Amino acid sequence: MKQAFSLIALIAAFPAFAEDARKLDAHEHGVGTLNIAIDGMTVAMEFEAPGADIVGFEYEAESSADLAAIEAAVVKLGAPLDLFVMPDAAGCSVVEALAELEGENGHDEHHDDHNDHGDDDHKDEVDDAGHTEFHAEYMLACDNPDAMTEITFAYFEAFPNAQEVEVQVIAASGAQAFEVERDAPVLELER
Image (cartoon, rainbow, N blue to C red; front, side, top):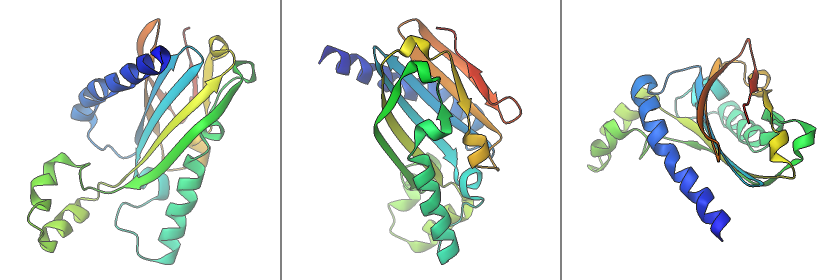
């Protein structure tokens, strides 16, 4: 129970780090964020990316082609070890994976007050702003987390519009921040 509690505390720290990043780069196309908490043999990951990076659009999907693109993206995002490849020696396996497309409601704080009116015109304003994001949360079990010395971002191959991922890593050794770019898709971790 103590391990689960400390992992929850680490994950709870993410919003503080993410808050600073969002103020600087609020919903920047081409840029996703990946938060990683390593606690013992458990690795928790939280990933967010603008809809345009993942499916090429951010408007509300209505056509069958757009809906199929979203469904396919959610499936891809539900396989974290295919997107964020870790060394075999780390022995990581997926315990839990959740991926979804989030709309503006509750996600774009600038427009929350408009949503209280129940007026569809206000909703259209928010939709026109195009702030949909994909959000995924993963829980991994790793037999040898010390062997997690790098992460290869196959994510860029899976999603051609993605250009960069801002990464925050929190472990017993402290917190680190990185930027991983399409032309250099391997993150070297100092463990």
